[in-house]
Image (tube, rainbow, N blue to C red; front, side, top):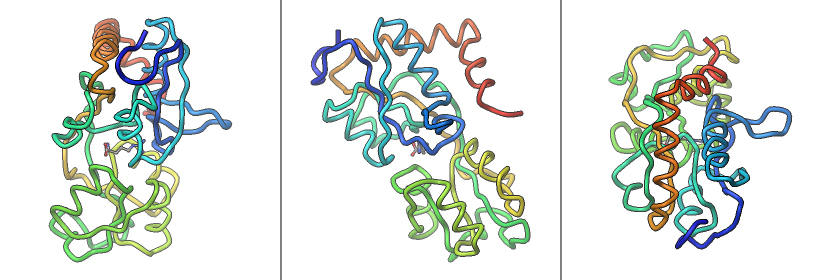
Length: 225
Ligand code: ARG
């Protein structure tokens, strides 16, 4: 049973923002993806039923902090500021922020981004990076809306996590991803800081899935090579 985080029942409530393939996205109305399968393994191991709730990305950490959800599994990058708000599991993915541009763009690398119109998903590490290092970005509720604005010529570039970017670019044939990533980051599962028991259970499942190849299997199921 969960203790000290405001919830205590046989459900494991996961919050996420489900427009982030291959980690979480909708397929026939259902939310699926790497994060969902990972949390299904945790739910199974601990004898609970997984319940997935979709919300805006900038609310998932607050939901865990407030005890409205047990975990936020949403391709969440570990940052020092977020570490003060929630507990993080061991990392389960190494990711990058990348730059998406039109094929005929003059932008060849991060140095060319100065003064350009850059789209990001609100509240993400891409948003933080661009705000801090380049300029005030244009913020969108999700990555696909930012990519659609880029495709429509309303932006010069989009900064987004690498794997979702590949999925988006595959759907827009005049867009490409620049070779040079802006950052390297690690994804982890966020839990309420008081819920150390759940954190240990999640870490044990991540360790096990790393050792027995289960994590690679889950990733391969959703990442098209
Ligand atoms: N990795 C980035 C971050 O932690 C973006 C995550 C966005 N996730 C999502 N499900 N939309 O800020």
